[in-house]
Amino acid sequence: MTTLVTGGAGFIGSRLAMALRQRGEQVVVLDNFNDYYDPALKRQNAAYFDGDPGAVVIEGDVRDAALVERIVQEHRIERIAHLAAMAGVRSSVEQAALYYEVNVMGSLHLMEAARKHGVRQFVQASTSSVYGKTQQIPFIETDTADRPLAPYPASKRAAEVLAHSYHHLFGLNVTCLRFFNVYGPQGRPDMMPLKVIRAIYEDQPITLFNGGDLKRDWTYIDDIVNGVVAALDRPLGYEIINLGCGAPISMTEFVDFIEQLSGKKARRINKPAPLSEPPITYCDNSRARRLLGFAPTIPVREGLTRTWEWYNNLHKL
Image (tube, rainbow, N blue to C red):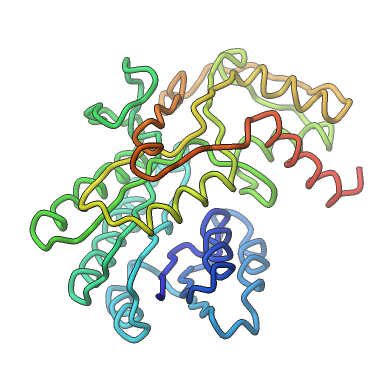
């Protein structure tokens, strides 16, 4: 069994590829090592597979249709975990064309290769951001999710819709997983958990939108990886499934707890939330529990404690 993991040198992708290797499965990692955040961090992740005969790391871009098809054909890919994307809600506001090129056209190239070469399961990483400023709380998959607040979630929703057409026309099994606020050790430096930890560590100011009233449903990396592996193992036709903890907290509570862990006070700056930011993300994960056996085990306080301890050990606070 060989699985292609796109974005496989990133935070979630590399942990997924590691988990698959630990199960004894063959993996092909495809990543373009772009500079959205420090590429050296992705190189470090990819280095985990150095000398591993069961893992192949390919530097390339999902926008390269010929490369994508060659990988799927030559490596006899049976499953695809498509995690490669231009990420970041606020960053997408001024770069809509780039986000659509990567997130929609890249997905199209992978689905086309998958249907041509008999890939039996295609897992598409999506985002809780597709729900926008919905009145349906907690977020549930039956929501139309047709009012995204920025190009990033709009592009991810478009990829979900495209996936349905490939299932309808060609019978491709596609599971779209809507991730909720993934965090943990070795996480992305542009995400709020590490930004807050780093700011407190360096005594730098922290911007909290709307006085810290925004609530987010933080989901620990190990729980997310377990959910993706379960989705790879279970072809379901076409499904959209939320993958999140289901326990949102305010950013004020979030920063308060990191202050407790660090023994230091944060320098907080209050600013109005950008138009791209919803007031809350809140996962109804009942479908994931039913279809995937998903059962998140790491509550946010435990996850933040683990993340703080990792950062503390790394920087010798």
